[in-house]
Length: 176
Image (tube, rainbow, N blue to C red; front, side, top):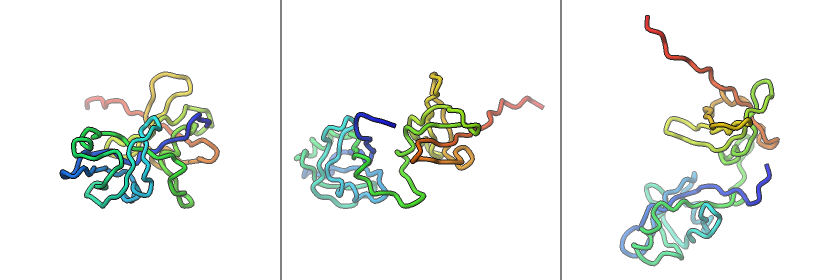
């Protein structure tokens, strides 16, 4: 997969101001919320500067801290909802047999006979479990594949593809 810009990974979102001294609350989407402070320079979705965390402490959903761009509670509240990203290269390398969900995006989805079904467009979670959104190779609307061992039995991230076994669709049951 070749991209003109580096892949960005969503790591948090501004939840608003905290207190009256210009601190900001950031919801963390990292295993360790304090990793946001290690990343420090957080970006917007377009790659432009978003927030520079200078200090912080743990909060129930992430981090409360000081940011270079924020001096007042009003300034922090104005950024509420801002999604924060870091370049994929800044994430620690996963352990063997582990990966980041973002690494699935762009992989070719192949059926059990090796025919190309499409590419992974995104990874979504609507509350029950992760779902892969597949953009069909032939065009048309995207479809979702549960990210389970049954539906995705083989992952070949380094080779750029995964095996996709579409679930059998069941029609509505006829009345007895």
